[in-house]
Length: 99
Image 1: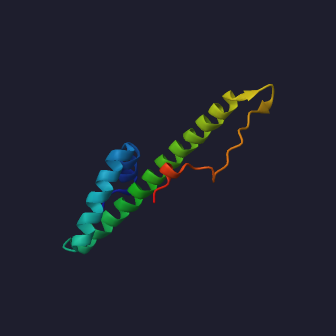
Image 2 (image 1 turned 60 degrees about the vertical axis):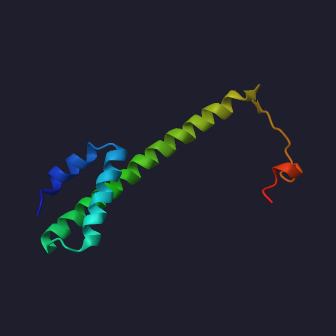
């Protein structure tokens, strides 16, 4: 079995894209079913760490997007009142309909 602390540190340093690539490789190896049991356990553990790492990275990006959205919406606020635009969701031109 690999050292969990070292593995956690290695995973923590990965970018989202690199972690996803490695996770896909781990899943592929496990799906083949040809790895010895001890190696399969190590791969599973690594896969779980990678999945959690990717989830954390996505959550951080989602948080940043929310903040940017709030800042952008705040730019359209005048005198403490938000501008609103009345839009009828059913007011669609016939040529814009998909069928």
